[in-house]
Image (cartoon, helix red, strand yellow):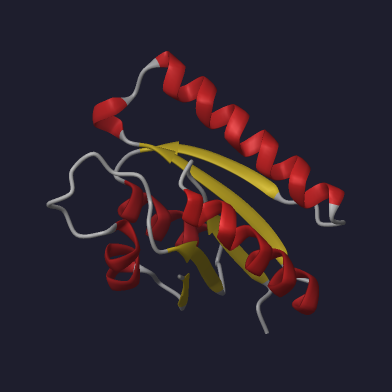
Length: 127
């Protein structure tokens, strides 16, 4: 049913808590798992790029220990737009994400809300 699952991750608690749901889903459907981390274009520094690489590797290792070998993608840009673009590129059947990502601008619509509006596939938002 879900051949390819896209899991956008950041350093938020919601992303960490969502990982368990993603693991169950991917194991149940024997899905391809793609982990995506997006560094916001306006905030990009060398430290951010290094941090993203470390975050992806940690998530990769966590899933691999559970028997799932995910693919890793790192991108720059506005998270909601990049998530939608990557979902389209990899022909994702489902995007799974937490409800609270890290954002410095609290006046903006949440990333999850924007992804729901822009995604080319269903989005499962885990509270």
